[in-house]
Amino acid sequence: MKKFAILLAAAPLALAACSSETTATDAAAESSEAAAPITAEEVTAAQTAWGEGIVAIGKAFTEEGDFRAAADAHIKKFYAYGDGTTILFKPTLAAEDQFRGDFEGAMSYFVGTEGSEDKGFAIKPWTAVRWENEGTVVDSDSAMAMGNYYFTDTDGNDTKVEYSFGYVRGDDGELKINLHHSSVPFGG
Image (tube, rainbow, N blue to C red; front, side, top):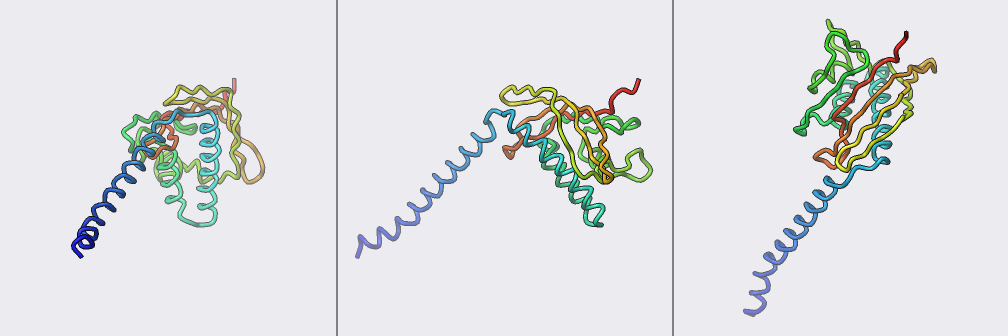
């Protein structure tokens, strides 16, 4: 009977030890994932998902849904605001407030702010975003891509925009934008 009592007393300690090992293993795996080198394929996937997010914001606006919540989620998912990273964001249609180094500035650009130059780029709405990379440079823990992206409106017309995006791996292991510069091509 004493042996049985000792086993019963030891069981929670053994389970706790196993649980601690699992937690430590999970934490090591997450840390390893967060430190994994960035790949060109991840950059392409991040670009596609970013474009889909822009379309989703416009769709939410058109359908009278919570487009601000969609924009909030988009910015948090794709930009490194809040990860302790400096963000360099120069949006296409910004002249008075050219640079958007904080979350609120990005939000204003995407959904608009009354009394400002921001009319809500993402709520236009756009139906598709197509990327044509001129090139992608990957340097283990960061990546840069440059090229043209095309925003398709509801009439099927494309607006060509030039871009340079920089990426880092966020605290969650996903790619985050730390540089976003876009502009309309020079007209001459």
